Amino acid sequence: MASAAPARRKRKPADRYHHGDLRRSLIDEAARTIQAGGVEHLTLRTVGERLGVSRTALYRHFSDKQALLAAVGREGFVTLRAALTDAWEQHGRGRAGFEAMGIAYVRFAVTHPSHYRVMFGGFVESCAKDADFLAAATAAFGVLVDSIVEQQRAGLIRRDDPELMARFIWSAVHGAAMLAIDGQLRGVDAQGEALTRYATARLRAAIAAGEAMP
Amino acid sequence: MASAAPARRKRKPADRYHHGDLRRSLIDEAARTIQAGGVEHLTLRTVGERLGVSRTALYRHFSDKQALLAAVGREGFVTLRAALTDAWEQHGRGRAGFEAMGIAYVRFAVTHPSHYRVMFGGFVESCAKDADFLAAATAAFGVLVDSIVEQQRAGLIRRDDPELMARFIWSAVHGAAMLAIDGQLRGVDAQGEALTRYATARLRAAIAAGEAMP
DNA sequence: ACCTGAACACCGTTCAAGT
DNA sequence: ACCTGAACACCGTTCAAGT
Image 1 (cartoon, rainbow over the protein chains, first blue to last red):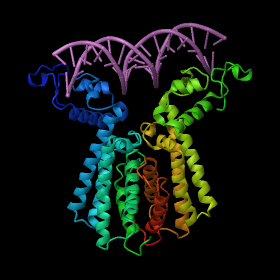
Image 2 (cartoon, rainbow over the protein chains, first blue to last red):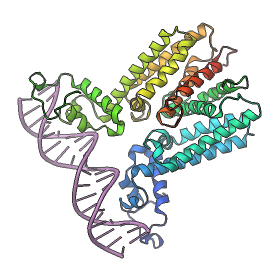
Image 3 (cartoon, rainbow over the protein chains, first blue to last red):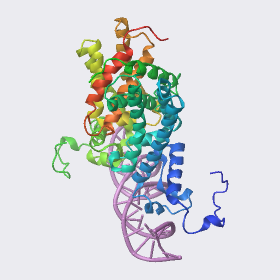
Image 4 (spheres, each protein chain N blue to C red):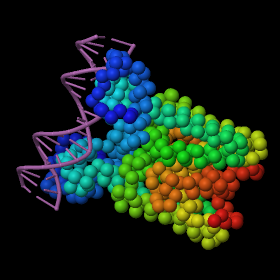
């Protein structure tokens, strides 16, 4: 990353025939490229070149470009899940924690826009194809569902179907994140902070405890 | 569209040197291809071939592929705007109309998933580049803002900043649409109907008239 | 003005061959 | 097992040339 001379690869340890952990390196390099220039700038040739490896070496570790993208997306979901869990637990697993989750979610999207697009943009064709990708996404979603169940038990929010509630909340926050990323929020509030604040406040009102709706 | 013989183009009227309205045909054909197989299946060569035209003829009408996609996306926003206006007006410009707008929105996305993705997927690079695209998107958004202002005047909903309220509502509905398109809503409710119904009901509660929040 | 055809600089992917 | 190098079938885009 910080190496200045591009054509130099003559160090002793790195020059062995077998690359240390090429799979890991490929994912990292792909993620870096995507973060820097968007998915459309990711080419297998460049990523191989940057790692000092043939452009077909990748096929030992991934079935095709899609699979590499799926792996990148999967890691995004792992990171997102960690961020959500953190927010929820650091803020007392209650109303404040729930709001913090929403803010953390949008912040993740805004700071990793291209990564976020790989996760949701449909680049991973009918995600169902990649089991790992789907599992990571489901796990991230699970954090939200769990927090909803917990709040229901504490009498903080309505007792509607937790899955349905989670989808609704996710929709709203995901939508805010997308609008922020897409630059639809021009001028003031380009980062979507005001929108996120307003959205979490209104969502709280929307799901406040009351009679259940079966 | 219904022509069976592929290699036959010898009819008298269609054989003139100048194509009738190539720009229109290009947009239509591109939209058709996208609807059928997704954006990634759109190639300029095929679209030209299908119209019986050189693959470079397109450059007389669009600066590049991006510009063609922007035109397709623009038309999507025009259609969406019409659908929203219809729903709003056909259902009495009130609470029912507002709900109908949400349902119409998700229905548009679900019935034109690939088209919807072109509009929001970031394929049109930092949409700001294409003025027509942006104008059409803003116009569609305007229908929502107008309906909010009208409902505020009628005392039906809170008097928060209409733009902010519109962004919040849009976020929620856009998010539901994306989840439905992405196939994240597997099994039951694959079309997102239950989610949309629940979302509109909860959103109504979220923005119900009350003390304003400046 | 509008369109063509050849050419250019790229892609992802395959496959026999190397170590 | 892991990687290479040449080859294949594609792209979008350009540009001189045709009508």
